Image (cartoon, rainbow, N blue to C red; front, top):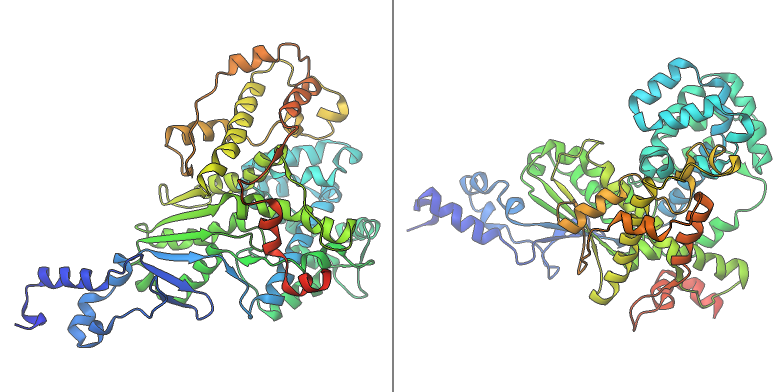
Length: 499
């Protein structure tokens, strides 16, 4: 009896068995194709034996196999352009934040209304800009601290871009920012429309081509002095994020093919270009299109999340302090939660941005002995923030500390982001879209923390007490060290030059 003579139910069972690969499918970024776990080509020859089999098997391989994407060293087609894109993106965000205070006189009621309608969290910052004195809005760095203003970094960037794109329609704003940019070492080329840079709205997860890179360069001001930071980062080996690769691959498929996919796993093993913590946003349209799709983003806690932050210090030491390679110190404990907050807030921002509920999860992974110490710091910071919300003295501080910032006690280093305490409760109870491998904890008692700090009279005292908990270093579990983790990011040409 031939296969075609078997009952359809039995043929379907055979199709499932035939197409199921141990470990699923893996994306090969250099070829842009899917492979088996062993790197072999996927055998679908049965589908091509006759049209009826092909019709019956349509979509079966994708339904039966999880598709895996892993961070990849920049392929040749990404190398120079994509690295340059990362630099340009950081510079563009910095310029927009730098000139945000100059937008104050040009924010009309209509502009404010439209911006707040799209980004409700931005109401506090707009009110701060419109009602505060100029010198109180001059803290560029503080204006860019998204979590203080109640949003994930990528959402904050979008809100600023939306606001400034409307303000930039007023020619008078152009002259105001020319002076601001000049004071910060930027040059506007002859004939350049300075306001055109506010039309730039690049998506961090989209790899640009050379033409798109050049367009960004033409719209942006140049610096009067060479950028040491850019030269430093050109010697660091970053990867393309798994989320970015997945988005690019899915966009090459037909809608019919995408609708058959059931599971994606993104393995973010290494630090990547261009604010990789927000790259899962690229997948929202595909999940809306295919509600049966489930995505798990697995992120290496030490080699990616913590390493990406510590790389900044590593780069600085290599070039600024000693002009070469040098041992890197351990990470300060007070950097841990602030670094994780980038990933946590971006994960929480996905559903409000359109990601269907219960379709995405974020899993922090690592070696067993190295996970719990980081989780304990995160949990302790969450408990202190929960207590801070009930601290009677949280609004007591100097004018410079509380009023100038526009965010009050949220501007202090012992505050991280609004949802942190609630999120950690859900993580402990196993009801959050975020997990930490090998980690456990107990819900805290706010009263104990308040009693322990009953001598604090204001935010200065509270912050000092919190900092006393963080006067220690964070180190990887042996045999790993920060040196062995971060030296993997040093490009080979730099290794040779600095030996």
